Image 1 (cartoon, rainbow, N blue to C red):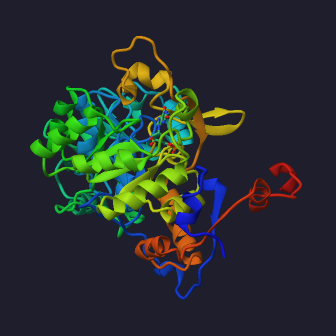
Image 2: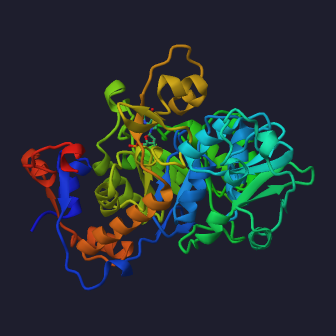
Image 3: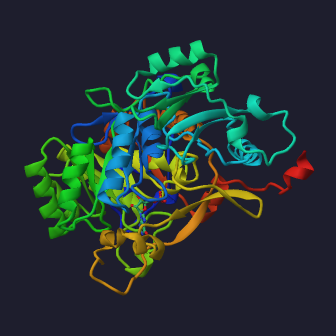
Length: 494
Ligand code: XMP
């Protein structure tokens, strides 16, 4: 039944994920026995094929830390200064499971009603108090619910109720030592300070209780989390690369909407000659010809996608690009022969699309919108029409270009901006702590349905023609979605 990958993707049309379906295989194993281990680059292997996009509404240190803890990777965006980006990279490399690196902090002049608001919005009942009211300020106290829960007047200031007899841990101590101090102190939260008594982190009793192991975590040889960082191709970016490598970045991703350029060639050569220890991912590409060039210039990984992202307008505005699944299939088939892993970048909106990208040959998927609504993405939540949202914007949107990212689109000299992306918002997805295990488990079930115990088996079937695909008509796509249900409001149901 059905078509082989070659038959499907080599006919005259360009296809994207919704255009096809994969036919089932036969199952002889449990879903929990499926492995989704893969290669992110020639040298780096990871346990889950999930990578977060280098976008300023997606990947900073919190995102990258959680992506790596759950077996994937985060690529820190470069819409910032070199110092800011290096700081984000260092926070990932310095991360130790259990330390809260940005504890909610208040100043002595804050009122009890402000504490109530923090509790209501974020659920924290204990806050370190610093002179400045910020992380990095001198620690002067700690305030917990127990200090003020019977005080009626909520205009009372924190300095009047806070505890000033402090038990602290010193920066540099191990999590085990800090946990011991916390246990002995019988407190709810333990501030961590540096030699000047400035607040640098905290650990909480709640976390201690639910402290979890991360068996899939992506780690370097020194057991630090792996992290990538994006750059552009301006001459100044050579300095950025040097600083990022010094900060500990494991992978440099050259972020460009069209990777087949002399700028990229020169940058790849520069990195390979001057920083041979770091892995270089080039892109973006959608055609074999582009991939051929980048591979011959020496990349360790390729990013595939032009205009396929949820916020992208490149295909419409520039009329250049390619439907994503066809791009993924052809580039991956070529790159595999050269041992270069590929990331299917853009248009991944659910587990099914992750599976379809991998089944078309991708080693990893890169996601923006799917992750931008999680707690760990940069930015605060806001409400619109009763829905909890977070901002998400294309790096080619006017908003983002105004900051820096115009270089992704070769327009640094230009005064007139032509947007290739838009700004919008995405729905709250909760924490990556639940969302990534959900994606991971779902993906293992998809592989089980195809009768593949791991990704190598999947790709073997793909290239031998044993994996069968079928095109979907618009009616069949409707059949595959939710249909024939009467809609009701939750209120009616409850
Ligand atoms: P998703 O679909 O996951 O896509 O939200 C994320 C990917 O989209 C790319 N990107 C852009 N492409 N205009 C574009 O044409 C833009 O403004 C833009 N910003 C991001 C990028 O490859 C990202 O990983």
